[in-house]
View: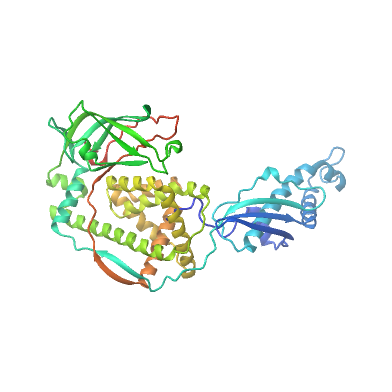
Length: 500
């Protein structure tokens, strides 16, 4: 997972306020703190901080001294009131003011003095903290941290690497996949078969009670129909031969990561009411169409572009295979317990990272949806694995001084833009708007780290066989989003049929 995988970018220090930065530049004295740290888990720290009475009085004195020249007290001109009267009148306001300053200064100092690396902001209840009239001030907070571990040996690993020389047949198959994006769905009066498209109403029930109702969903008939929370195997056999008006029913076992927590692990009945059957008519490779696809001068130029895209996909598969071996080797002793809250928060970040990598590698939306659903169905395991990978790769990046540079961002965004058909500027704006630049940065750094590990590794090449596209994936949870809520039906065109 990318340190895309963290809700907040990993930080080495707790952020400072502008006021604190100013104080530091003036060389303010360190606080006399007592700090007690306990470890509920490898990635959690509970910190109790005690601020001495001397520091509290020093901050109070500074605050009142600054206020004296402007303090307004009835019966006195501004700035002329006795200090005792100023202290009595402004006690509450000054107490709140120095509370914030003491907290920020204390947090900054704790961060610098402690050995842990924070990966989130402190969970601190400000309302529960008070500046006492006598004695020290104590506050406590929880914070998520990078686990401490001994770095595994990562130089000289023995790895296998998939390789393939792409043939004309490979290019033909990829061209057909590519053309489906520009195809037209036409009515088909005969019985349906694999590869055809159905428009169907989908209803899922549990013990006769309706859980999900989805209307006019377009489905391509493939061996597996993938929902966000489970898969229906043998979907092609189930609907083989159907015509408009027919109904077919199957069953889906929901995963332990299904969004509807009450139905996790249960099996729902899913019924398909077929509204019509269509087939995809592919466009001809005319000069006009070649220009529309990407301003290709000829079919030969198109095939060259497809071969380059296949090579990018192979590089992605190589990276995934190599990454899996590297992280398997490096995480063998990484048996840390990860907080459920951290895993839950990172689920979507991990999905975002995975989708961006797939787009960069040139995969089509149908393939991306299939892989995304697979990740959703095993979100807890995939997120935990991704976080452990990230922590180790981040340590290697620090040791080797590996960072993301502006040129790296431009390259990543350009490759994503090529696949999406949008301008790099628009893609960047979308990534920034969704707060995913840190995800992209982590993705870049991790890829660089993996390359460094590969440069130190010994490889054995093995043949690569692309997996056939046997999965039709849809953005729909068969078990619904919640036990009492039926999600709104969402009409969705598949990318294969977006020109229908």
